[in-house]
Amino acid sequence: MTRLDERIVIPCCLLVGAATVLIAPALGYDAWAWMVWARELTEFKLDTTGGPSWKPLPVLVSAPFAWIDGLAPFLWLALIRAAALYALWLCGRCAAQLAGQPAAAAAFAFAAFGLIVSTDLPRTALFGSSEPLLVAFALGALLLHLGSRPLAALALLALAGLIRPELWLIALIYGLWCAHQLGRRRGLIGALVIAPPLVWMVLDWAGSGGFAQGAATAQGKTPTSAAREAIPALEVLSRLGDSVIAPVLLLALVALMLAWRRRSREVLWLALLVIGWVALVAVMAQLGFTGARRYLAGPAALSCVLAGVGAGWLIAAVSARRARYAAAGILALIFLGLGLFVLRTDARLLSVALLDAEQSDQLSGAVTAAGGRSAVVAAGKPAINPYEQTGLAWKLKLPLSEVQGSWGSSDTRPNWQPPAIVFVAPTRLAGPRPAFEPGVKSIKLGSYGRWEVFRADR
Image 1 (cartoon, rainbow, N blue to C red):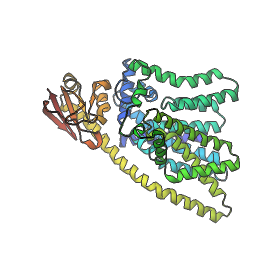
Image 2 (cartoon, rainbow, N blue to C red):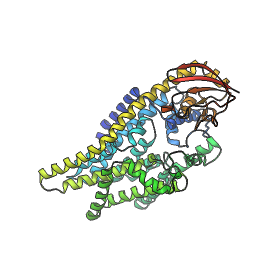
Image 3 (cartoon, rainbow, N blue to C red):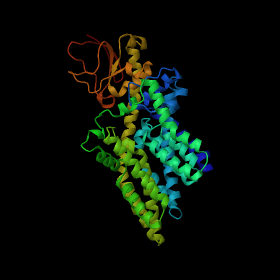
Image 4 (cartoon, one colour):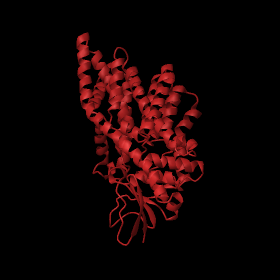
């Protein structure tokens, strides 16, 4: 990486990422859970038996700041949004380096724009998911590899392996290649390969008493799980098609065909990596894991790199300057035309993030309306709309297992037990409202913003 990256681009991304948090400080369900676990880790009380599936990197990054209320969520969200911005730069850099001159400028532009309009990067960045950081690690590893810095690339793959377990196999294969090519420092290479699964399972054991609690949670049949489909692996393949706009996949295929003709081994190996990564997610979905579309964020980003290479080579192949400009313009119009639909959705997501941040802030007022933390905890395990379960656990300084989320709540199966203080918000952002089954006596304690607060007893 050049000095321009380190001295200008990275600080600018961090500053812009922090500025966006001031505008829309919205954290999703998983991100609030990581904040809770980070705080518990600093108190040596880690409990991973509730909430989403376990992953260590967000917790380890946030733990040093979790003891200061409000700091860890702010810093994590700023980091994720900065990582999303830096990933755009890395995507363009990788495509430009692979395409070479005179195709580099076009490759950079098309790769970066393809990633902007990928359907998951803006959404995951808005709500503090870990995928933008995963994408930045994967693209950074690719750029370091192209710059002949394999050990640094392996280190980034190891960090990515603390976010998604699919990277364990990729890091192992790359580590074996490093050991063969370098012929030295094999102890360091082995440590980088072994560390991610070891840290993952040891911390999972510390928080749950077992080495596979996170895997068991990840195999839960959520409504959007690919494992619910007749052939989960095929569903994963279709989700890859949904994760990027169609021209990205077409240009990635063009890059593959041209790379075969040009004997470009680096592009061919990159295409093989994309195929292998998707296959890993597909196999895991076939074994019962959810196979969510965001699990394909890495291969989708690498597909954007390939698309940039394909676009750059196609444009550079046109000999006449005027015709070359026309070809670039046509491709740009196609990208922009299809990308506008995604950009419109992203604009709506921003308004959702603003509402979600406001609703989360109002939850603190709702706790006060219920009599404060001590009154809420004394009444029993509090209940709340499911998407806000982890956020309430953070605000009340409780383990996730001590807050009841009304997943699939109905009058016959409310999925929470009184006695409890019950926080109820509209379904749109917070998920199904906690239902009160017959025989439960509820008294409204107050309201704050979108929240209503009840005391429920048998």
